[in-house]
Amino acid sequence: MTESFIASAAHLRRFLGSPAGGASVLLLASLAGLVLANSPWALGYTALITTPMKLSFLGTHGPENMDAWVSDGLMTLFFLVVILEIKKETVSGHLSSLRRVALPLIGALGGMIVPALTYLLVTCGHPEATRGWAIPVATDAAFTLPIILALGKHVSPGARAWLMALAIFDDVLGILVIALFYGSALYWPALVAVGIVTAALIGANRAGIRTLWSYATAGILLWIALLESGLHPTLAGVITGLCLPATTSGKGVGPVTPLDKTGSALAPFVTWVVLPLFGFMNVGVSLVGVHPDRTLEAVPLGIMLGLIVGKPVGVFGATLLSTRLKITTLPAETPMGMLFGLSLLCGIGFTISLFIANLAFSGSDLVTLAKMGIFAGSVLSALMGWFWLRFLPQHDRPSSR
Image (cartoon, rainbow, N blue to C red; front, side):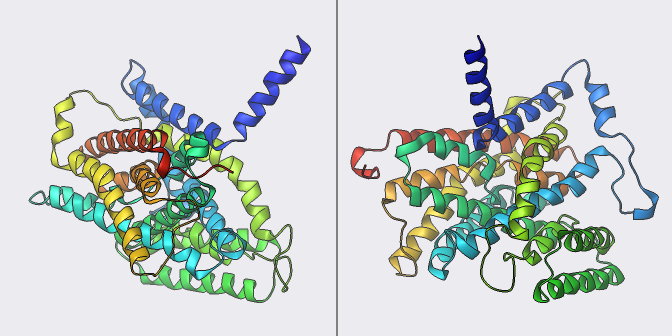
């Protein structure tokens, strides 16, 4: 009995520490929100996520309820963790050389441009719908990583690193799109404050300051300034993450850097609290009166085609072109067939896509249709990518050693 309990506890710990564990909780929380929003408890669910939580000292643009605090506040930590991961890879990981950075970056750019154009082509003639052009541009690393890990030997280590780097770049590009295209009217005094705090963060890094409270304080001040600036406040996570030192001193990369400490402290909280809360509050949309045939309307159809067609065409096409022009080289043991399967997985757009959908169609019934398109496109992309890689012809698989 005791041995069985210990074994079960060990399995649970491994699951909770795995990417699959985090993705499962995010998916379950999202489904819980969807079920509650379409159940007899729908009014209670709506009352919960719209609980007033306004703080007067944050001014008129501060978060007003629980949903806004998650989207504008806690999600800043998610973007901070994303930036810390890519910075760590550029300092001492798979992206530590320009040539290694170029391949996933070019793929990410292609995977942004083609889905956006696909969406705009489908929604042409629908002016209100075109505001959602950025919804299908990002890949959700929280779901792609568990899938490629589950595929095991069917995906080479180099290909796995390439896909994760591409997903991270996708997230970064998505953050920039949010900051530049989905903010409100710019308020220049607040933008000046943003510039001053950013300069202070850069100065602290250059001066060799390694105390985390200094960066945390500046990050909070930056977030407050961004609230009033017209840019999206989650940009504070990006700027703070870029300024966090990746060294323990002025010489070389140490074993436990401020970047590592921050990432280690925040990653579990983001995985087990922030993302599930975001999914729970943002996926919970009422489908009353929404018929399945509405998925063929401009917005959901544009998103679905952007994810299941635009994404793989953009990622695979840009990557193939860069290798043909000798700008980059493919990862080791990664044939083109495998690369195409991974490009299909890039159509899994969930967290960032939902985030952009809320910004693009805030207060409109189009947000429900957009979320339908996100779900359908992401599920189809996941299934197509998994089947392609799982049943890839033997000669296209990485050689076993």
